[in-house]
Image (cartoon, rainbow, N blue to C red; front, side, top):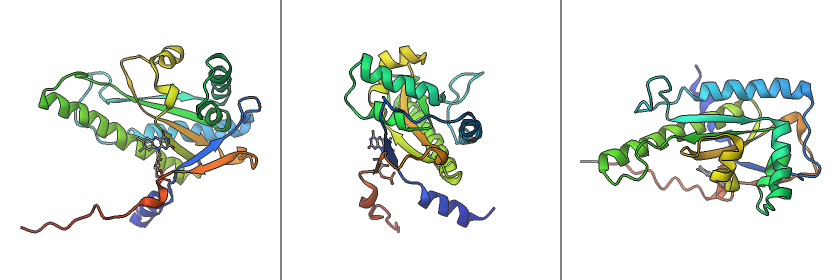
Length: 209
Ligand SMILES: Cc1cc2nc3c(=O)[nH]c(=O)nc-3n(C[C@H](O)[C@H](O)[C@H](O)COP(=O)(O)O)c2cc1C
């Protein structure tokens, strides 16, 4: 293992928000889909090697779940959101431009508890799912696939969970929009992360006793 490679990948990861048009969505050829979908599938599996502190259940211990939406379905969903639900936010455009989407959820265990021990468990489920999500972003970056961790907007609503078949008790950690390099469209609008250039490193302190 070369630690420098990992440093490079972490520094190379960046938010890229690609906005297309639901009426003229990105269409991925079977060949391009086959290669890239396989990369995304494997990246999600490897991302699941993230640490987690509490087993959620005996047969499905991890606190996270991942749901793939491949290109045909992202395109259909883009049109559905725009035309049927009249969604005006950026999700239909993001769905129309991307190669695929991974919806990452986590499973609350003590959703409304104020008890410190149970709140800690919830926080650590979220922490573990965040680690899994960042693993995924790094793997996609290393494979040359553009990516964007979005809160999800309309995609996090119970109505959309029901439509997509995601249990409504799960919470969306992020909608990960994945760009396939072969499908890059110069006509698409690309936006960087709003806070990209606000990194300070002022959050590091040396402690001494
Ligand atoms: C939990 C989480 C949710 C995010 N949700 C959004 C979002 O809904 N919209 C958005 O524009 N960016 C979102 N971002 C991306 C941030 O805007 C981005 O990471 C930040 O601007 C820094 O840019 P960089 O990722 O290129 O370093 C989210 C990031 C995280 C960690």
